[in-house]
Length: 147
View 1 (cartoon, helix red, strand yellow):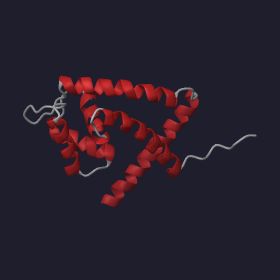
View 2 (spheres, one colour):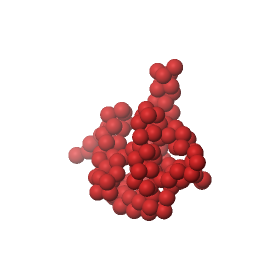
View 3 (cartoon, one colour):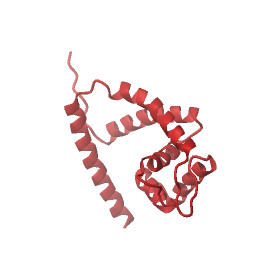
View 4 (tube, one colour):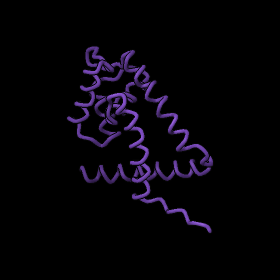
């Protein structure tokens, strides 16, 4: 018996996103962190240089499509936890923040390997192209709604 794979659409994308996010959130919960905190900390960790606080807020807003006030709250939570620090208008990641990011990344890499492992590279490339296009189009729609 053969089965036909479902076509990619908003539902299949959403189901995949929420399933993977739920796994990541269970890892984060064990560390006392939230998904938005993880996104903000990752942005600070991979930046080439310490970010201006408002630039980090803007990147969190763009990444999570959240309100700027909520994103400022997330950055404030990371500052309160000592994972980021303040140097004038900059918010560099601390050693504790780097260690936290490395630990969560290592744990999430284990489940990512199981989730993504065995999928042919050409399928991943096709999915990547489609998801990039969907993201671009959805961002354009959001911008039009906000105008």
